[in-house]
Length: 136
Image (cartoon, rainbow, N blue to C red; front, side, top):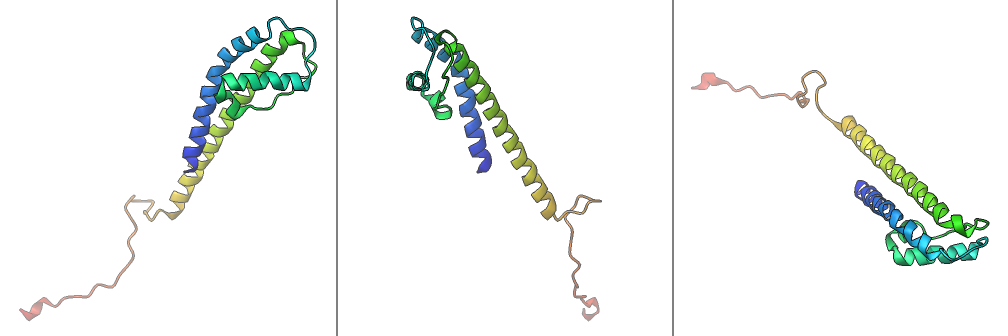
């Protein structure tokens, strides 16, 4: 179950990262005629417009504070930030998945009832009743 969640989140982040190239074009066109410095509220409005057009990105990124950036560099800054965050997010999901798999393998090895020499299941010693075949 944990692996399903991790892989689902990772696949979604990969799809969101694939959408960032289109989002950069969208941002460049949206901010084409603007100039000046950006405030936190303005950058959040830009992010809201972006997540409205690209909802998959909004799942992973929803807050933006690019205050102090020039409007001409805002699209590039947001693009780099989105790519950096999503790459980091994907690697975190990958390492969580790998950790879950390793822990699962260790647990299975701890409870495995096989003999290390033969690879066959260990058998418990039991007392067998001896039949007397002389009665025939």
